[in-house]
Image 1 (cartoon, rainbow, N blue to C red):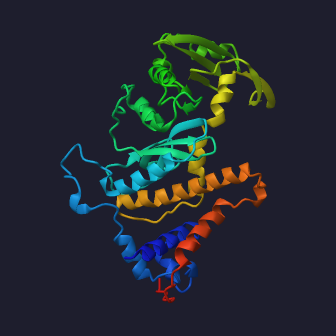
Image 2 (image 1 turned 180 degrees about the horizontal axis):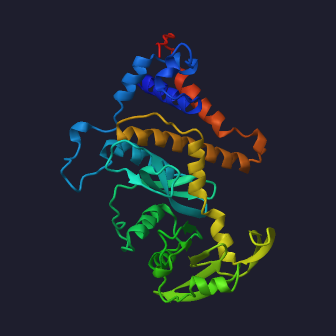
Image 3 (image 1 turned 45 degrees about the vertical axis):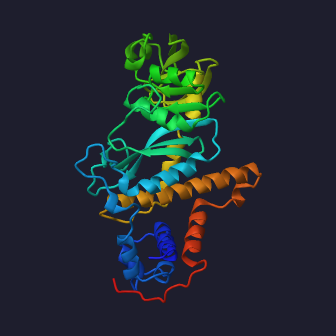
Length: 375
């Protein structure tokens, strides 16, 4: 297999993510075949390349009985390369950390079950993104969460934040956003002392020194009511705000507070009308950036590579192709917007992915003769 062969293969895979058919072999069939795929290479050659995809030396693979082995050995060089390139991207000052699920139902010890996700089975990743969805760092969850070298142990979920934040500059007004699975007083205090502000929803059991009213007490005060408390931990001042909307939500921050209040529109089921309720400032601040990883997820899902494979590492490879293309498009759009290019004149994600596919399939290459095989 040559470099040209691999580029043509990737080009056809990207084309398949745009022009979807239920079975791979249909791309070469007489009735349903798609020339952009069938004219690039034969089906047999395509299958041969797919089966031969490897990203590390299997001869040097660690012993499967070794509990300390690198469980991502088969894709380690690929992962490290993509991570290093993402870390080089100039960062926005507002960054969020959240989990991402790569759909996969095959056999793999790395597969996780996340009942709250649309696709419930797959690989779990942790991403560092900005409010636009641009990814700056990521990590594949392997079932082990150790402290970051040189950093304190702030719990399994907190250790993930510290690893993701290891690429964030210190003392330059960067802000980290995360949800209640990660958030704790210990974590936010350490980040603040390291020169990084933070904000997140938090579980009340993790609040040290803050005794907030119960859900029932806050509900009696009515929709839009809230309570704010301040605490100090290891010399760091933190503010906790509990706000009641449809249900109570508690937030913790080292820089934001309830003031100034603002009002938001909500639908009242009893009166069937729109009403205005009070919202603490900290809630609006949190909502500004926390959706960055979800935005990346949504864009990847638009034209996801859905090729089936029994090999677990191929699923990760296809996902990385999707992610890096979305990242490229988001960076392009950021630069185009900065250059004041009108939004309706900017290239869409669909067009960018199609152009990349065409270049990989055609530029400097001689297309194979069309030899479509029957379905």
